Image 1 (cartoon, one colour):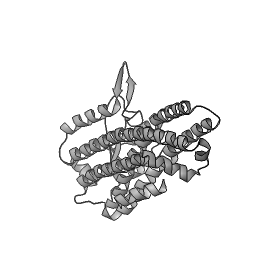
Image 2 (cartoon, helix red, strand yellow; image 1 turned 30 degrees about the horizontal axis):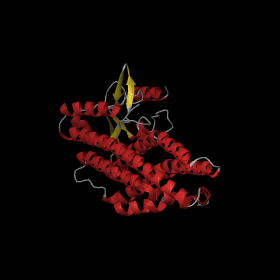
Image 3 (cartoon, rainbow, N blue to C red; image 1 turned 180 degrees about the vertical axis):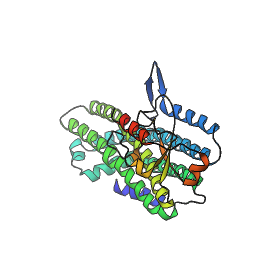
Image 4 (tube, rainbow, N blue to C red; image 1 turned 90 degrees about the vertical axis):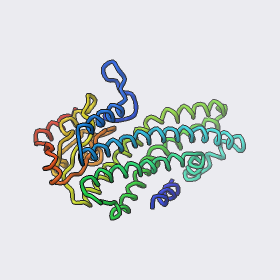
Length: 316
């Protein structure tokens, strides 16, 4: 995995999953709801505020596209892995494959197609980075990531490792070893391979949740680094204002929060607010703004009561 990520790194020197949620009697696609709501917001806005909202739309679309593309890559790699593994078992034996150490078996899995999912992840991170740059550029003309690009690239590789090394690779390794062990005690190959396919498929939902969450966190992390580099310490909480917005986010959406206020926020999920917003699957983002922009746009500032309401919502 480390070698795969090194290769990729050289190439680059309830609140938002794209799944149906129950909302009353209907199934609602939270991402579509969010994008539609933000699109309505843009129509009422102008100038830099509209640019910031459009950047949030771009980032959400990048996250949605990434989830679909990575799901496709995982499905494809699963099919290739099953064919490659069955051929390897027929050519040698389950025991010979079980004798491979972790790195050898991991290379086998990556070569079977999972490496493509890694590349898709990093490509999606690049698109999210572009959206973050667009939002910051609306406030700081000619702002560029050049001074912090090295740090951003390190974050990108670290995020990819956390998804693949900590989640997807272990899931796949465990499933493959379990299948090989079953075949080693005379479980028919076809039966073991069918069980392996089902186990890998059942893990996909959790893996995609992790992918989506990490990409959203990456976007917020990049934005925070950019804000620090540009000397900005106030943030507009950008995102949809709809019926499926979580209780933590509702008191904050479309309001300006200072860095000091952000440190007092608690989303109740044990996740850093600066990179996770309201928590898992949050569709909102922190858009850094200047004092001049705050005054010119007449945006409302979050009050102590708003912070308290958000924290109360996070504890539900």
